[in-house]
Length: 112
Length: 114
Image (tube, rainbow over all chains, first blue to last red; front, side, top):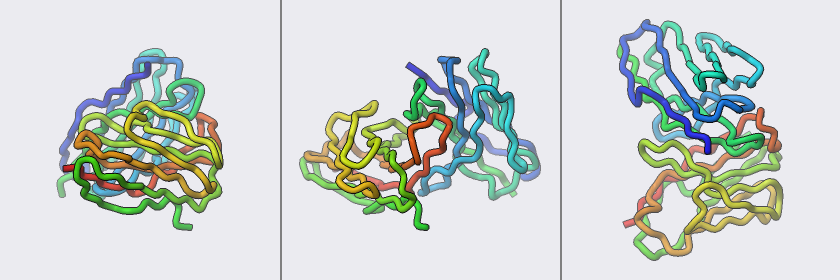
């Protein structure tokens, strides 16, 4: 069974600081890994999807890396802004299908 | 495009009552999913559907039933609500079951069972 862990559970940083969010998974035989953003009272929005053959994926200020062998992914957010305050979740498919295993998320607060 | 919508947004039930949560998507997606989100536990899959008229059990299906009579709608039913079913419920959809495909999520339904 795939277990997904995100540490820390919460993070508070001053505006402008770079954010580093961690995700670990127990079964390294993954097909991809996704990072989602969840705003309070809202649904999830997909940020980045990294295929198993990729080492990293970038979108604007966001960069996600993937190390399958160590069972880890890291989401970097450069020059954080108050608008980046949200909960960030990572998810991996359970096996070779579409059913996702989610981490509990890291709640980020960026202080102005 | 409304994307994925959920009805209702919030509901309070008494133990033993029943209710149905409605999920609708206008993206012509084949696959639809129901998740629950509890504090500190992430999202867990309750039931899913791979096409109109099909349903299948997910990780935590007990106490729930689902139906997919129309491609655009996926209903989640609670026949006899229990306090343990207090949670936030999310519906999601995707084009197909390809593991590299993004799922699109609705805004969620907050359910409180007293």
